[in-house]
Image 1: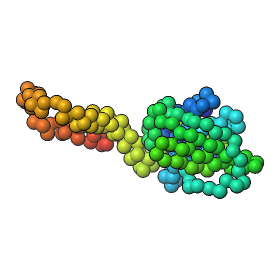
Image 2 (image 1 turned 45 degrees about the horizontal axis):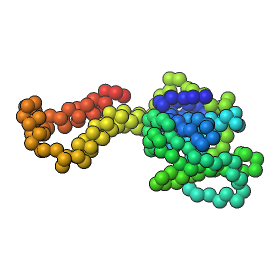
Image 3 (image 1 turned 90 degrees about the horizontal axis):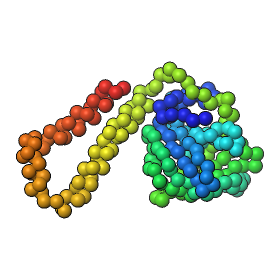
Image 4 (image 1 turned 45 degrees about the vertical axis):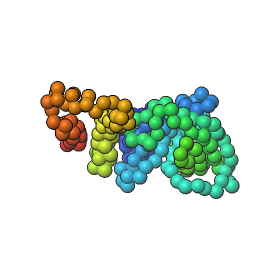
Length: 209
């Protein structure tokens, strides 16, 4: 029931690629994975997770607020992110208050996730496990390839940006002469560092497809 970032899935008659993966733990001690899927035919994003209680997959997409008059609350608590892969917009230790609703016969669901700075709403339904399978040798669309290339670049550039941001943040506490001394010792022009970073980014974009 676990999938990996970059794998393609056939769900009923459609094909999707996993562009994001998040591992959660909640206040009830449950651990689960949520997958961000991109549909090949139209590049729309969906969410997939395994529901142990239902013995089925829960398939959903983000939406706006909805009228919950015909739905009942079936689960609630707090969830924390404990792992992330690929294209996701949350970080490890991010926490949200969640509420899960279903209609009377369980054929439709609605979820609310209240994060620190935003609230996500999603609607969905359950899919029997026999309709979900890993699909091998799938031709990935150019749009999805571009997004996966961006993930590769950010995985490399992200730590560099973090280091540079901290250097700039604490720059006033250092003697600027120290930086000049390092530069003179290495006898490198300042532009070399930038060219190295730019060259590595271009390498990932052009040769890692």
